[in-house]
Image (cartoon, rainbow, N blue to C red):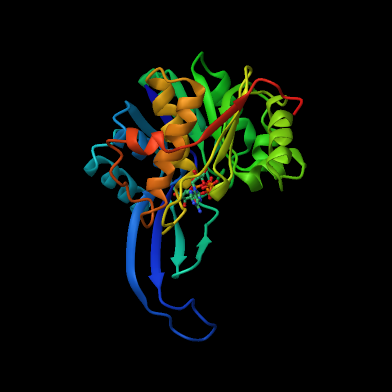
Length: 307
Ligand SMILES: Nc1ncnc2c1ncn2[C@@H]1O[C@H](COP(=O)(O)OP(=O)(O)O)[C@@H](O)[C@H]1O
Ligand SMILES: O=P(O)(O)OC[C@H]1O[C@](O)(COP(=O)(O)O)[C@@H](O)[C@@H]1O
């Protein structure tokens, strides 16, 4: 079972406008949606759609926290959250025909005591894998994630910002930075695919057994103890990339959970992400009958890291 931890959940508010707002003028949204979000919660949403056993945990508070609980429950996604005094945040994405703009709130202050309660929650659910995803709220530092990774013998996977990746000290089974997060975590250039491979090797040496770097329209690369792999992105009509990285990670984890090889898992992740970027917000597109999509993902791999 794959349990996700979102230390800073979000309610994702997605607005579609014809023209991006101008100062001192009212912009009209012709579409709006509200989704329970935050990286770990999104991973659980996609895992559930991929019929992989999952429990979403984290800290939630006030009416937006109740919205997260209620919408996950309505979607039959098991949740086991710690209640805090603060209010779960609202993150806003504005979509125009050719661009997206995102404003993420810092979130409520969370005390280290909440981590004690969260560790009890995680232990009670007895997961095989724990995924910690997203930003840290005010009051928590990277040591909170290290505490979770060291608390028991579950495998820990992280999808967190670059500065957090750099600061973590425990050992991790896998991390999933995007291009910007990879650059921040390693201080290395990430312009070419070779640059990204070199940066990913640097990250592996920092305590991550496997590293997946998601590269937007350039697909994703994965470095394992055995090889390095590239999976090309699929040509797709992109509506909204929010949730893209979470869905890539969910596809990889679901495939690995089903016994797939690393190469097949990366292909599955890219296939899932190609469907997710085709829908607004973190709406869940149909993720069944993936085989046809996965087969279209081009993969190359090499055991030779010198090239
Ligand atoms: N423009 C795009 N065209 C096709 N696929 C995309 C595009 N942007 C993202 N994806 C898919 O989503 C995955 C994750 O996207 P990315 O933007 O790297 O993640 P994040 O949301 O973490 O920044 C990519 O590896 C790719 O498979
Ligand atoms: O686009 P990604 O990286 O897959 O993650 C999307 C999710 O991350 C968020 O942008 C939150 O990210 P942060 O926790 O880094 O602020 C949510 O609003 C959204 O649900």
